[in-house]
Image 1 (cartoon, rainbow, N blue to C red):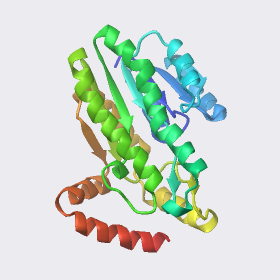
Image 2 (spheres, one colour; image 1 turned 135 degrees about the vertical axis):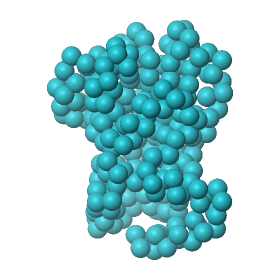
Image 3 (cartoon, helix red, strand yellow; image 1 turned 180 degrees about the vertical axis):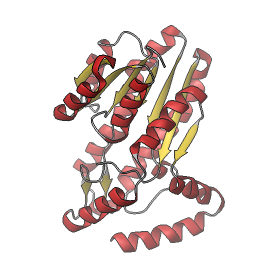
Image 4 (tube, rainbow, N blue to C red; image 1 turned 30 degrees about the vertical axis):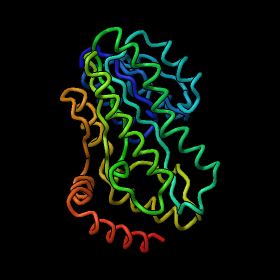
Length: 260
């Protein structure tokens, strides 16, 4: 990836942070954004001379994404990673919660593709990686808003893949399972308090390292799969969703009772 430009959204922590560092270690120049300026400052220090553009950007704001894209002349790999977590039953989820999760998880991806894809088309090459989730394959209960955004990201990616292929541009949807990031701690869970702490601990203790997803993301930019799951749990769930959906429903209901 020597001297390629890799754009990573939500790069302040977790998967985005790991992806930015891995890309830099492979010789890329990294353009990174996040809403957390302190985390961005840390990342900029870690990237050193591999930092291309580092900027605070709220991906749900089209004007901010447009300005970020304008600061970058060319892009080889776009990683639409920025995302937020939202858990809770549908009746517990407010319309403000819906606006928030749709703004970041879906419109943030749309904004990234809208402003960066034309740059790739003009050059006749590039790769877009959109971070979906295993919940973009399996419709887990008590997460309807989050699930809706991740199914949408996977569907968008598959459609865009067919559309951009004639231009020499690949598109991949990455669907990680449980990853040890701050998505639960930084997110919203109906009921909050103990329920949120319990979920955050499960992710922290049992989640795969974000570096595993980073490796999958950069490998996808080279091999161009349509969809790539990450983690043993994601592979098992994706297989069950395909061949034994009723078994998966029973497992999901059991987990819901345990976390409820």
